Length: 478
Picture (cartoon, rainbow, N blue to C red):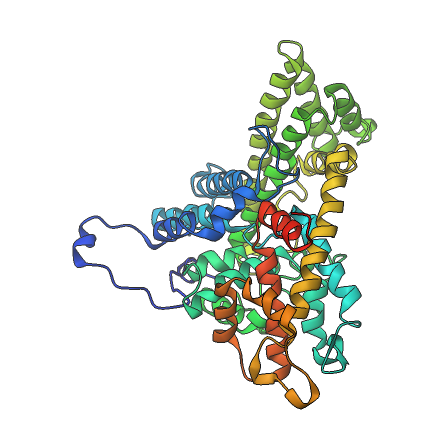
C-alpha cells in the first residue's frame, strides 16, 4: 500500500466545479469533507442518540455526538504524533503533505465512525438483529417465508445488523446523489471490518474479521473503493486501511476513559471500589518484571492514589483519566510505528495496544464498564425500552414494506398492500423511498432485500426521541 492511493480524494459521484476565484484561498479536499460532515443531517442526529447512558437531563453525559467529537480529536492527535514522533520507528515515507492528509482523514473518520448506529446505542443493534433472527422464518412474502427468498448472505446481513456496515451504507448512497459525498480515503478508513456477514468470526486472530463490515448491497461499492485506495491484496482479499487501526484505537481510548468518567459522575461506583477492581485485575507477583504490563498498570493505579491525596475524588479521577488517555495514545502510536511495515503490507492482525506497556491497562478500563455500568437500572431500562420500541416499529414497517413496490403486485392472488400498510408507508421518510427507487434492480429477490434494508435505514436513522415518540403515537399511548 502507498499513501498516494490511501489518501485518495476521489468521490463516489461527481463534484460540482467551484468558481476559479476560490483557488485564491485553497482548501484541501479532506477539509471540504469535514465541512460536508458537520453540515449533514445524519451527523447532527447523533446529538440525540445514546452513547452508553440513555439521554440524560444533566449537561455532562456524553451523547453519540460528543463521543464522536472526542474520537475525532484523539484520532487526529494520533495522526500528528505518528508524523512527528522522535523515535527510531518514525515512518520515513510520511512527508509533510502526507502528514496533513493523515490527520485530516482521521479527523473526518472520527466524526463518522458511529454514523450508522441505531437509536439506543448497541442495544438497538442487538434488538434489530434479534428481531430478524426470530421473524425471517415467520413472516411470509407471497406465501413463502422471507428467509426462503433471501440468499444466505442477505439473511445474515439482517440477522447480524451492524452499525459499522450501516455507516458504509449511508455513505455509499452518495453514488445516487443522496448522501454525503466523501473522499474514498475517508470512507475506506471508516471500514473497520472489511468482512461480509458470512465470513466474520469473533474468535478469529485477525481483528478485521471480528464483525461484519458491509452488507451485500454495498459489496461492489466497497470493492471499488478498496481498489481505488489500494487495500486489495494479491489474492483479491480486502485489507484494513492503515489509518483504520488508529481510528479504532481512538474509539477504544474514548470508550475506556470518557465513558468511565460519565459512569463515575453518575455515581455508579466509588473511587475505592474502582481502585480495588483495578488492583484485583492483575497478578501482583509480576510487577517486578522490568517490562511487564503488570508493572505499568501498577504504576498507573498508584498515580491515581497519589492524585487522590491532594484533590477531591472527582477531580482526582478526571485528571487521572486525562493522564491515562495520554499513555494509551503513546503506546498506540508506538505500536503503529514499530509495526509499520506489517501494517502497510496488510499483514498486521491485532489492535494497536497489543504487546505494549498498557495492553493490560486498557483491558482493565474496558472491563470496568460491564463490572460497574451495564447492570445499572438506567442501562437495563434502556435495554428493555430498545427491545419494546424497535420491535414494535419493525413489526409495523417491515410488513408495510413487503408489497410496497407495485412492480411486484399480484392482484389476482391478493399480493397487494393493505389500507393500513399504505398508511404506514405514507408516514415513511420520502428520502428512503427515493433511495430504494434509485437502487432497485428489477430482480424480485434483490428488490425485496432492498425494501427490508429500506426499513432498517429508516429505523436506524431515527434519534432516540423520535423513535420513542413514533412508538407512542402509533401504539395509541399518545
